[in-house]
Length: 635
Image (cartoon, rainbow, N blue to C red; front, side):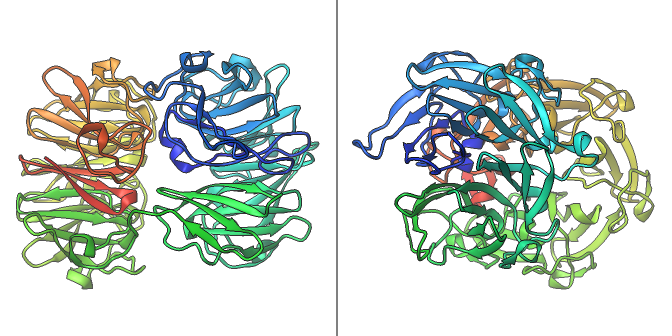
C-alpha cells in the first residue's frame, strides 16, 4: 500500500488500514495489500473493515513527534509519508526522519531498517550507513522494498533481510535522472510504476535492470488530456496503486482519478462524479475484489465505483477561485504573502497572479492590481492593466506596496491610492545575482520582502542571499550570504550562509529571516550585516517548542514582528509559532503539528493547511491559510 493521505506528510502519523486481499494496493507479488482510511495522530492505526470498524493503536504516540524505536506508544515517528506491508511487518517511509522504519504487526515493535534520523543524503549502504532525502513512496515485492526518494530524484532498493540499500535508478545510475520529485510508487513484482510528480509523467522501472521508460504522459506538459502513452498528459500525479491489470493515479493538479491500462498505456479519466474537491486529492487505495477505489482529499474520504466512476463524498472546506466579494463569498487561489497598513490587508494571491485588498472591518475583498484567470505577465500599468507572474512576498510603507514578483525575478511597486504598478528593481525573466540600480540588478526567484521606511530587504531565495534595495533609487546591494552557496554559517556579510531563505521581517534594527531549508530563524543586524541563529537547529526538522537551538521548525515560511515577538508560519507543521525576541523562547501559538484542516478555535483546536503569509496590525495576527484559500484572523 502506498502513501495513504497527503496530510500524513504534515504529521507524526502512520496509517494501516484494511487488508483487502491480493493485488489490493501497492505491493505486488507475494505482498499483502491494503486500502486506505485516513486517520490522524502520531500512530499506526489498524482498522479491519471485516470486523467492527474500530481503531486500535499499533505503534507511535499521537502526542509526540520525534524519533525513537520501541514497542507501541514508546516509538515515535516524524511525518511518516507512506506504508507498505509483506503481511508480517509494516515498512514506513518516515519522511522527516529520513529513515525507513519496520513495524512488527504482531507486537507493535518498531525498529529502524535503513537511514539515520535527521541526516539527509544519498549514500548507499547497510542500515544506518545509508542516507535518504525525504523518502515519500514505498512498496514491496515481499523480498525487497522500493522507495521513491523524492528529493534525491531516485528510486532506491532495500533488501529487507539485511537492510542493504542500493540505488536502482537516479542521476548517477542512469547518467541523467529521469525523475523529478517522484512520490508515488507501486509494483507488480516485475516492474515498478512511479508517479513522477515534478515531470507530470508515469514511469516504468524494470526491477531486474533499472531501465526506466515513460509509460504515460509528457515531461513538463501539465494537463488532463486522455490518450495513449505520451499522447496523454498528467498534472502533478502523486499517488499510484495497481490492481494487477490497471494503474490508478491521483492526478492532484486537476483533482482527478486517472486509469492506465498497463499493457497498452491507454489513459482515461475514471471518476466523473467526485463532487466538490477540498484542497486537492491526496491518497488512493484500491479494493479490486469489490470494485472500489478509496480516495482522500484534505477533508474527506470518498468511495468510487470503478465500473462507472460514481462516488460518494463526506465533505467540508473551501475551493479556489478569484471572485471579489465579502467574507466567504470571495475566493483566492493559493494566496501567499500578506501585509497591512492597519486598515486593510494586502494579499499576494499567487495562483491568480493578482494583488488583493481586504478591508479588515468588513472583510470586503477587491482586486487592487493584476488580472486573474491565467493572465500572468510583467506589464506595468494601473490596476488590471498591470500583470504579475506568481507574486509571493509583499510589504508596505503605508502609501505604497512592494511586491516580490517571483517568477519575473523583479520587485514591483504599487501606489495604494491609484493601483499604479511600476518595476522598481530587477529585469523581467532574467535570473541572476547582480547588484546595481533598477533593471541593472538581478534576482533568483526571490520570495520574502520587508521594509524599514527607507530601504527594502529581500530574501533572494534561490541565490541564498539577503539583498537590500534603497527605495528612493532602486539601488540593490547584497547584505548577507553567498550567492549559490547553501549553508548555515553565522558570520558577517558574505561570511554567513543561508539555505533558501524565505520569509523576512524587521523591527527597525534587525532583520529576522525564516531560513527555510535550514529549519531555522536567523537574525541580521542591519547596520553591520552580522548574522546569528536565533532559533532552531540547522538541518534538524521537527515541531518542538523550546528556547533557541532546542526549538525545531519544519520548512518555516513567512515571518512577522510586533516589536517584542516574532510570529512564524511554520508551514509544513501547519502551525503558527511565537518567538520572544528577548529570550529566544519558542512556543506554538495556534495549530497542531501534523494536523491540517480548517477548524476555528484556540491553540491546538485551530487547524491550518499550509499557512504561508503573516502580518499584524498590533491587535490581531492575520494568516494566509494557503491551501484553504483563506485569510484567517488570530486575536
